Each structure stands twice: as structure tokens, then as C-alpha cells.
Image 1 (tube, rainbow, N blue to C red):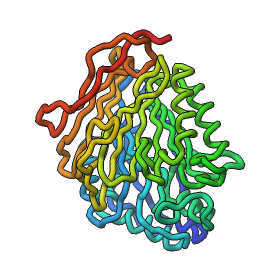
Image 2 (image 1 turned 90 degrees about the vertical axis):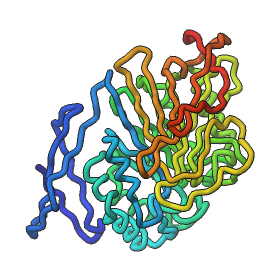
Image 3 (image 1 turned 60 degrees about the vertical axis):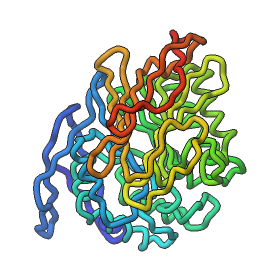
Length: 379
């Protein structure tokens, strides 16, 4: 056991580091305080699996309402890891005590409290838990917001020396996860969401990654819609990332995002001869108003549905080729959509066409529209 000292400067939060843990093991724990207060029961968590195993990763975004019963469905799937992609509360302010109060309030809500106690959870922010609607890095008060965020989210690291932010990377079995900060340095440099230091860190990290699957996580959607608050407003920077993936044959990349208050799946085509499609999986909202998908279908869209939701990735590298199964689940744990991919489909290719892997909607077996997937050996 380890002792963490807490105080008013840290809003009475603390970090305890556990060492010597073995992979893919369940550990039981209890938290005690010097005043004699003991956590209400013994809880447990499971450590990351070894390489060559099955990894289940849940993710979602946009928590506003008191009813967080959707996390009961998250717990039923026993994920190894939960990723929260922003709007993890709607403090909408630069006032640090108000931000801290919002984080405390959500941690006291049924179902979410249990989820955090039992599931390793990592987080980035989006606009509403940064400073307010559509805010960027030019807004005053971001230093205090970052301080409060760090107090309440136990990420493995934060930013880089000399480059503050909530971005980091972490390895989980055969999966490497790149959690991006699209707010702290947004528009500090014209035309940039990430800023030079974070962008170069990401490109370098992708080149160096040996993971079979690389997850790029963004609070803002990756698509090419007309939204001024998504990557559509930063297409040049986004395309630098996509082009590097294809030019240097970096395989196994998938995109996840939140923000838009409806779940969606997109297949993005990259304009290079040897490119493979990049699949974007959007999960939003966990607990907020749900928006309509609209009457038309956006370019590359495979799925959209107006429903509360969370995403669940099953990444299985025990078999060859390794597989990725994505499920979009609702508050009652109903599967609204399923997408199945092989990791060898996410490699740079020549122009040999194979039959597609289509999405499946509503657990009824109905296929959604999709195009052929290009497949061949890597360059």
C-alpha cells in the first residue's frame, strides 16, 4: 500500500502509484483515510493484458445529466479500459472552484462512481470541460482549467516539457492509444488544432509505434463536415497526419471521437494510391440531449442513429490476422451497430479489390451500405 497526502491546494485529491502488478490480473483494494473513514466496500480492477491477447476498450463523451445509468451497461461488458473523450461535465467556465465542483458532482453519481472504482479510466477534454462552448487556446483561464483537470483524471502523463496540455499516449497490450488535446493550443498558431509541438510528437510517436493497432482519439470529430469546431476547420493539419500514415505504411490506425451528440461511423478515403481507408468511430452522448442525424447522408458515412450510447472495441490479436470488432451500445446494453474489420485490411495496399466487410445495424442482421475494401500485401 502507499500513502497519498491530500490538501486544499489539490482539492483533496491524491495519486497512489501501485507497482509490481502482473498483466491481466484482477486486484482487490480498499481505500482508508487517517480520520478512520473507509471506502464503503472492497473494489477491484484488472491490469492490462499481455501482448497477443484480447483487449476490450469502452469509450464515449458528453456527460451532462444526472442519470448516468448507461455506465451500468458499460460495467456489464467488463472493459479493460474506459476512454472519455471530452465534455466530461459541462462546467463552461474558467472559474477553478466551479470546475472542481463539477468533477466532484459527477463522481458522486450512481453508476459512474462504481465505474471509476472498477475500470481504469483515461480522459481528454473538449470545449465544455475546457472553458466553454467552442473555446480555443486563445481564451484566458486555460492554465487553471488544466490544473483542475489534472487533479481529477489520473492519466499516465500530461503534455510535454514546455508544452502544457492533456495529450498523452499509452500502450495497452497490442494497442497503443494516442489521446489528443484539441483545445489548449487550438488557434494559438493560425490553422492549427494541436500546435506544432503536439503535432510533431504525434507524428514521431506514430512512426515509432510497434503496436498492431493504433487508436487516435480526439474530442472533435475527424470528418470533413462544415463544422467550424471540428477537424474540418483544420484540414491541412489533419491531412498531414493521414498522409504520414499512408506514406510511411503505418498500419492498424483507427480514429475515435465524440462531441456531436449522435453516434456515427465514417470511412475516410485518403488521396494516395496505396492508401487504406481510415474508419472513424464517434460515440456521443453518454448523458445529454441527442441530436438528429438529418435527412441526408454525409460523405463516407456508414451509420448514424439518434440514441444515447457508448462505443466498445474488441481487439483480438490472439488470432492471425488480428481482428477489430466495434459495437455501438445503448443504455440497456443493446447493440445498435456492429463493424468487423481485420487488421490486415488496415495496411497500405495495391489496387486489388476484395469483398467488403459491412456494418450491421440494430442487431437485426441488416447490412448498411459500404464500399469494397482494398486489400493486398504491405508495400
